[in-house]
Image (cartoon, rainbow, N blue to C red; front, top):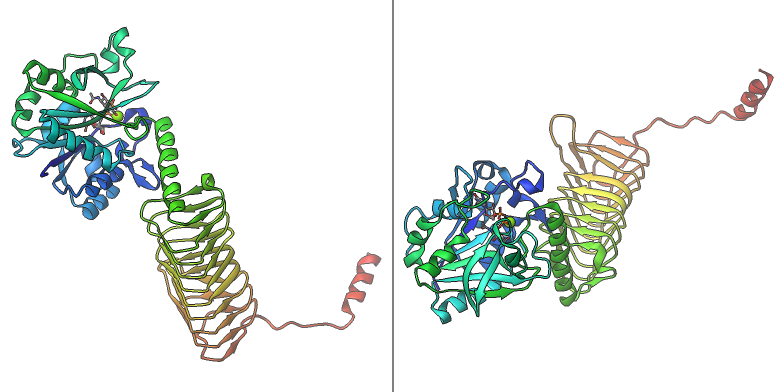
Length: 443
Ligand code: UD1
Ligand code: MG
């Protein structure tokens, strides 16, 4: 079915107590708006307009999202309410049904929106509203219903004591037939306690016009709207449960699922084991037979087969770790490619480097990639051994099979199969310690 989607995202989100536009707050490492767009795209709906405030449309993260997910943006210059926001997006009367979604409902599922579309087709109603039942309806609009028909939606602050007892709440999603939408929107006024143009009033006006408005029910959690940090934390919790359960069903072992934090789009191979207290952020791909040990943080990384990562590793964006590599405790890696069978087992920083197959990076090796002005690169050929506590001062080229002595500060290139040592030579003074001790004791 050909449908236009309008996502209302211009609200300030004052209840968040934050300078960041509300829909850019994140759960599972992506903005609330991203999650709504993700679900819409699962339904293969591509005609999408986001109603944005000036602050939102100026935001870098928003621009990246628009670039990646290709949607139209409509500015709502003044925030006069949800009906006003929709009117801004529909300056030209639509010629297909409009699915209106709130930008702060990240837990919605595609199958629930599909059920709305199915109901729209089967009931031939002019409006299908998504609702949910909850024991604690605090803050949500309440549906006054008759069977599966909705007569009106009453916002909590305008509701009577009886209406506040209603447990069927508005999830803020509506599918509206194109024929009546402009007329119905024009009837909405701001005659309420908030002095806002409420989109919810479209139901009352549809009923008054003898048009049919019906509702479908989604589950409580998924229909949740995020207005404050308490709801944001609850939504994170729900989304993580979903992501963990999906990973488990795909065969990933999560030893303690509740302590692992995941992101949409992670690619897992077969026989991946994730130990407790691991965070996996955006753009991560993990091969087969990989163990991610405790307290590891991964982002923008591709990890090959049969690798061991952690405990306490931090793998940052633009990192590729090839098969059979071992990255141990307190290792940070960014913008680097590690060949097959590389070992960096303890306490190192690897940045802007290409490391050949089977290299050993000794404990405490630091790739000094930044000279205060720019990032410089280090290339290390295969089978090279870097001794412990080495500083590799980039730009640097180290040939294959080289050996770097421990404690070196390497500032010049090293040729294939050379041994490089860059530290002062040790001097031993025979029995001088005894003399020193005597002098000290005589003082
Ligand atoms: C809204 C519904 C309420 C429903 C709840 C579900 C109205 C009047 N109320 O309340 O019935 O139970 O969602 O979560 O619609 N926005 C704009 N421009 C504006 C105002 C809001 O774009 O001028 C956007 C917001 O960014 C947000 C969405 O519309 O994404 C909903 O606004 P919000 O203030 O969160 O409404 P609720 O009070 O949650
Ligand atoms: Mg809301």
